[in-house]
Length: 455
Ligand SMILES: [Zn+2]
Figure 1 (cartoon, protein in one colour):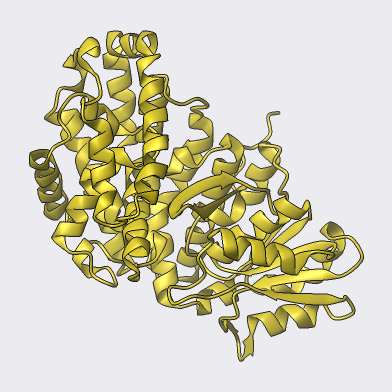
Figure 2: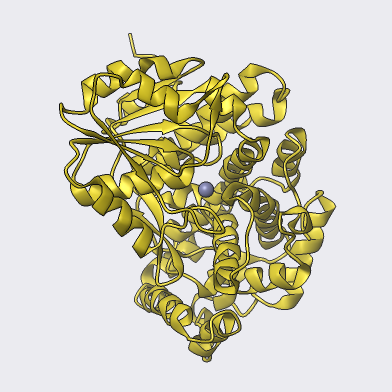
């Protein structure tokens, strides 16, 4: 008799032999916290990491509810600095939280994605066990071992550490602001296109670790986002499942790449533009949702209209003015040149690698029909994420983001996609082919608009 395939997040964590096994995801899960803390966090003072923003559970406050459940243990509250645009995990913010946590024997982070990422960074720095109390269904980053941190003004996904335990109280998440839940939908729909970018990078020898067994369950788990009525409690549970399984898959593969392609790059670019300009930006998942419709449109055009398989491998070379184009992308936002220099280091690494990679590239084009069939399976039509976003009343267009992203900024983000970091995506291949230009970007935006997204 063979064991049944894993279905729940905890079953995937066990099947993949991950360091995070203790997952309590249900209504009332906060009641499990005393047992989880006793099991996973050693005796001594606990650090309770949060952002100071009140979060309701029933008529109480989540932080109070957590403290009540830890009665009898010594608890030190560590409050992350909240700026005009929320908690920004730059060098200073992480250092302050690390300094504030020195001497505790274990950490509990209480909050949404940013606080959870901060908890993982502090736990890694101080080599402490961490339990994450997830207060929103906003991103998939709770259940993995990576944090999105800001280094030299650029968003970077860096390895930190696994929470040992994850507590998701559906009563808490159900009371979180609706915008956070809608943002979770946006992060979740990326499963319908991001794997195509990751597969492409692997097939071209620009990444390693392609693992369809890790990604397929996440894609399967996304279907209820279209099928279920968001008013049903089962819909929130399904959203939490896809986010948690997605996080586990990221941790299991050791990279966000499987669920973070062009659509995530667009969101990171919008964040960086807002940071540089000192303005606000919308939630990560809200931006990712809008960008997923765009990325699906791009993949559809690349596979149906641009005959990728006919590209001549020897002709795939970076533009001669690559460095100027990278620096120019950022010059308007950061006249000091710091962000441009940081991005150029990464982009140069990417295309240096491309230059040494000719064998894998030729092999890819020799075997194009097989790769094409896989890519067509991984990249879904733009109507699919657009339908899920509409089902949850989540944002589908750049102009509906808060604050609105105008056509100029959206086009800048798309144009800059190959110019930000070392992760290879479809836009890099198109840049190498001399096809990543304003005419193609306009076609992509038009196709996304046809699906209810785009500008
Ligand atoms: Zn994400």
